[in-house]
Image (cartoon, rainbow, N blue to C red; front, side):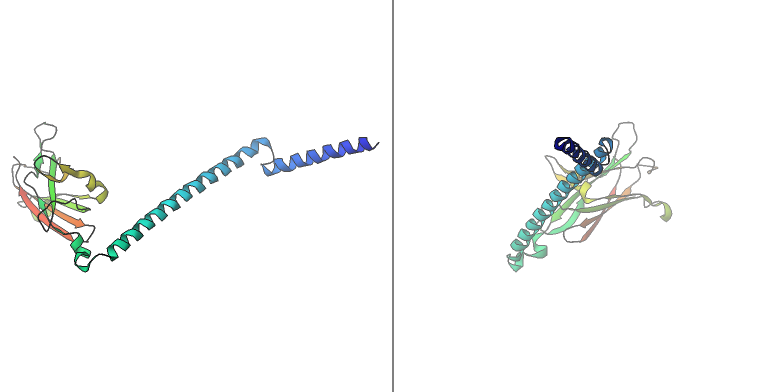
Length: 208
């Protein structure tokens, strides 16, 4: 008689335990999968956050090292003396171009050279604003176009040849210039992101 009463008791416990586990997993095998997916998603997010934290810590450590180095420099080489962007130049190659050889000059290419105090070219980081003007037009129609180039894009436009090195900026002017044979004026404003200084330059161009 004892054996008869013990076996059902074990079966009841096993059944109740199974139901409890099934309830935790979503009250059934079909509903347990979303919970597993959620656990997997949270695990991935945790790993991603840990990676971001590690990256921030590495950047913080790098900045601390830079601060330590800068604090140990002599006074005469600190601040602006470390970075001496003095002017920008618009080179003679700045002009209107027919890039697709259809007889129409639909591109404005602006060549800019950042120059330091020693007259050397430097790849200065910054933001550039370019304007194209026809000063022979009425005031309301004098500005033919305006463009802005952010630092992330500007750094990709550093262009070197055997003859020179500069930033080369290309803009679409299709429909903006009525008579490309007339002199036009290119205005450039270069904001140096290291010092915050703004350098301005302009150049008159005439399509070749």
